[in-house]
Image (tube, rainbow over all chains, first blue to last red; front, side, top):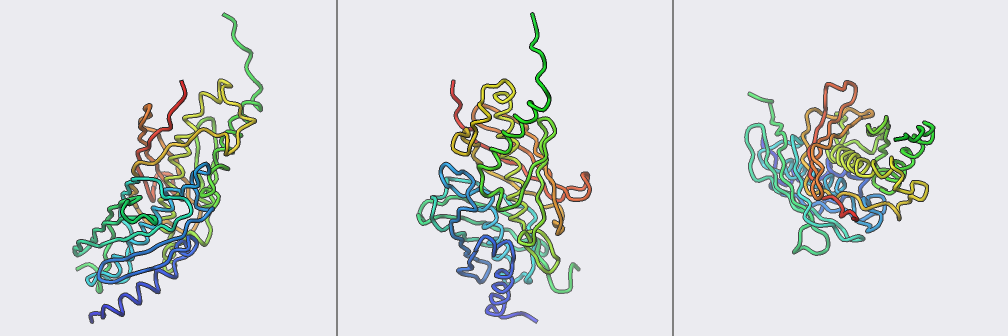
Length: 147
Length: 169
């Protein structure tokens, strides 16, 4: 039985908001549905990678991108709620401004029987200049398993 | 040519350990993740000490992909930074006693980082070692391998490129 889009979004939201690591980074789901997710997290002293500048560690941005990519996959009409990252590549385009909230938007742009392909972008309060871009492949879980 | 007498081993170890400790203390995110480092000579093994907050899938349970990516990136940057300082530390060009997060040289910056998730991370400690495949004046390429119970059974690996800080002289 196909799930309604609202049901799917609700399940994905519940799932994402229960993830311990995402909670530890104080991630907030801003938007989800139809293979697109927007998740943001606040700047925090604990996430700093370069104490001289106060710039957040690349790893924390990776974590945001990974969570957002997974959320985009879970919200895709052809995927079930449940996915794992196969690979993720991040390009760091510039340092995120210290003190500013970071927002990521991920889009699941293609789904096969077993794999979901994702593109993502992250920015701080300057939406016009992304801080990072990512591409990734995620597993797709389907009802009844693999034929 | 006369050789300098070898230094007491405790002094050598203390200098290396202090350098590593200063590098680690300088990065708050390492403390947040709960990553520590074992050192044998110039070889570093990073340890991701298990904590419930590192979980990404509570149903399995499995470590969060973002926690794993962070662990690997922290390991790569630490290997590269320790490598970068090694000669200065060994030859006494760096005043190790005076090293603080404020006086540390600038760290390498990540250009890109690609993580390959090979199997799910179990809810227990994980280990990682990085290998610097190329270290040039401006760019470096680093590969990282992570495992849990069995060194031969990697659960994640990564490759990253880094921009090296400008050096004096």
